[in-house]
Image (cartoon, rainbow, N blue to C red; front, top):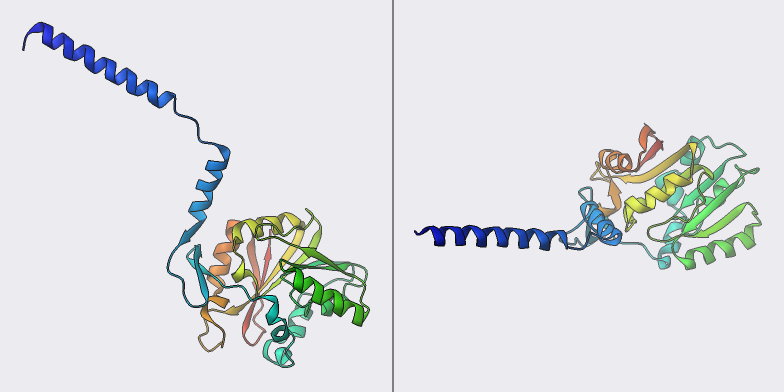
Length: 251
């Protein structure tokens, strides 16, 4: 190879390298919106949908289908107390009369109206994402005359609760249905006072004899794993209910 050809190749290679570097430097920076979307992808994945799931996975768990407001009569079934011992669960929380309790996914108000007389100097915030459920509770309130129950229409990603406002959060057989569990729980944790506690009640996923669809049950290990993501730790799992975990979490 002649010297002229050799120098020509060096000049061409240098030009191409500089041009490539210039193109990279001129690329637009990643937008905040794009960064947020990328961050969400690491929390949620898509996969096969089971008959009672939605094909969306979080921390290795498939999120379940949501029970709509047409299922409200099932929440009020006469045999529910015998099957679940809800009164025992509420007593185990040892609520104070001045407590503010947020019942997340309150549904028909089955638990909200049982807790309201206990927190006579405080209140129960009955939260749900279905307006129809809130209407059912308002009609029930007109009948029972209980006044210290307030209603909040939440969203899929936001509980819509005020920050640092609640002493207790109760989530009964609902968490597994959250479409965006990380975002929803982050908003719930913000609403909890520094000493606030979360009572998470879920059908025991470890027990195949519990007659509930698989995606509507959770193991203690899975619950602990998911609560850790939002800064909550398990204080106690009260083993007293026939079919469910009663897991108490704190900040």
